[in-house]
Length: 169
Figure 1 (tube, rainbow, N blue to C red):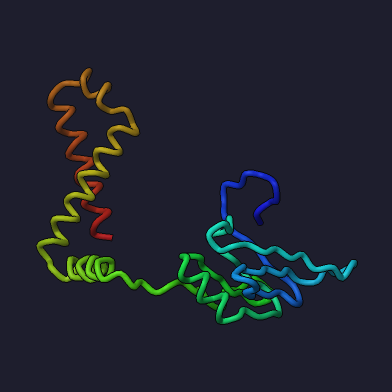
Figure 2 (figure 1 turned 180 degrees about the horizontal axis):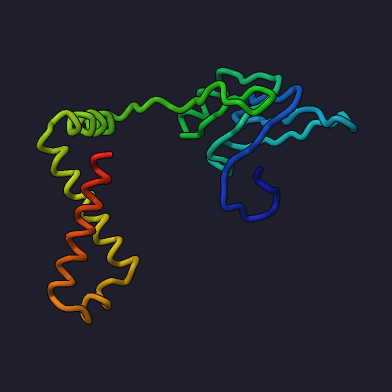
């Protein structure tokens, strides 16, 4: 949960309990938390959507979301997650991609995986990057400089064989 008057490294607001709601009033998003068990009080926040510090809002419990508020949140790339009272996700509400360019990119990404040649190229690139990462992680370049040429070849062959086994699984 985001803490008031503090810098937070996450931008998620949790609204939970009985009576949670998200509505629109005077062009502001109104976030109401559930009723407190003991005091019966209800936390309420109002934000202009551009100034709202939350990227995601999680709604858990009994309550409602107005269509106007949902529309305004989606227009400003704010996501809404609905869960039941036990925290099990019911729905993820995200804005529709209305950019034709973004849609074309997504279609092209899917088409890439239909082409066996492109898939093979990507597999080789992933294996190569993984090998390079493993070499850097294990600091093998320093060790390889000290080893004989035959030992270098043997280690690289073992890494290539291990990467090939990973692809087969």
